[in-house]
Length: 142
Image 1: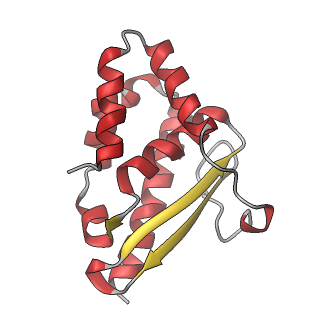
Image 2: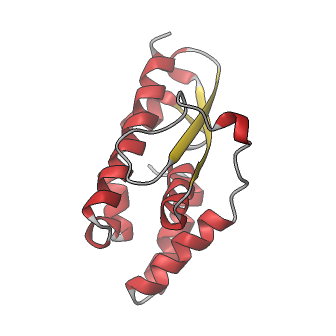
């Protein structure tokens, strides 16, 4: 089950008739995020597999399956920055077990993103989801 913030995005997308409007909405979501401090844009937070520069900075509170994941992120590409905002809406504030239970592909399909992103952007989105899952798995197993 997706977060309320993600459900709001999905509902907004239902009212936006064409993809250009949805694309602009994703970009606006990214613009609304706070930028990462420069000292957090380091190799350890950089996501490999993205055509653009992407950094995800996780914060995990607690231990084990009930640990709560929060993260911030940034990209040098506006649409990717928006995708980070969508992923934050999907995952932030959930337990790591809940993060691992989410089918991100199915959730993104609800937004129609799978059909409208370039193959490079789709690969980057998958890389971001995989990084979030890896962080959650590592936190659960500690």
